[in-house]
Amino acid sequence: AFKYLVSHPDADAGIHLTLIIEDDLPPYGPLMPVERMPSLVDENGYFFNTLDKVFGMNGTEISEELDAQIRKAVDAGVDITHLDCHMGFYHGDPKSFKIVLKLAKKYDLPIRLPHAGLAVQLLREGIMTTDALVMVPARKPGESAADVFKRLLNEIKPGITEIVSHPAVAGLDEYSADWRQDELNMWLDPEVIDMMRQSDIRLIGYRQLRDFQRKLKTK
Image 1 (cartoon, rainbow, N blue to C red):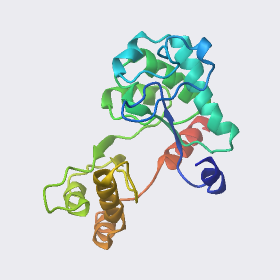
Image 2: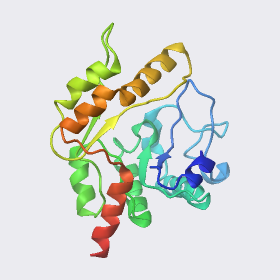
Image 3: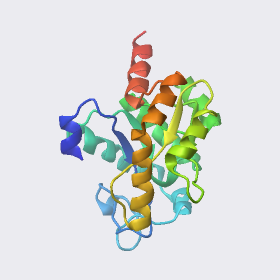
Image 4: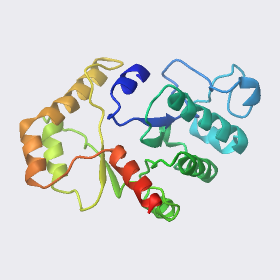
C-alpha cells in the first residue's frame, strides 16, 4: 500500500487510526513498544477487541501511539489527506476525540466524522469535515448496489456528503467478495455515472478538503 501511494501522489490516503481490533481477524499490537503502552494492550501485547476498553486507556499512551501511526505513513512518503478511525473509537470517547483533534491540528488534516454536533466543534478549530455521511443502503433480494444507489442519489442534500462504500474484487469469504464486487460494479455503472452528472454532483475527495483547509489558514 505504501509503495502504491508513494507512486500515486494524487490518491486520497487517510490514516485509519487504530486502538481496537476485530475479533475475527489475526491480532496485532501497537507500533510503539508494548512496555510503554500497558493500558492499550492485553496480556499478550495485542490491542483489545472490544470498544469499551478505550474508555480505560491512558491519554498519553493513546496520543503517542496514534502519533506514531501517522508518522509511519509520513516517513514512508505518503501524502496524507485526512484522519479516520478503526471501529469508530473516537466517536464515543471524548478523551480520544480531543487527542485526534490535537493531531489533526498538528498535521493540518481534516477528520472523517459522521456526527454533525462534533463537526461544529471541528470547524471552530479550523478543521474540515463533511456535512453528512451516508452508507450505500442494504439491498433486497434481486437488487443490485446500483439499483439502491440511484435511489440514494435522489435523497442527497446540498453540501459535502461522504458515501461509504467498499468496492473490491475479493473478500474474506464468498459473501464478502460478492457484495464488494457488486459495489465496484455500482461505481462503474454508466447509468449511475450519468445520473450523478445530471444531478450536478461533483466527485471530490479528502485531498480537496485538506487543501481548502490549509488555504484558509494561510489567509
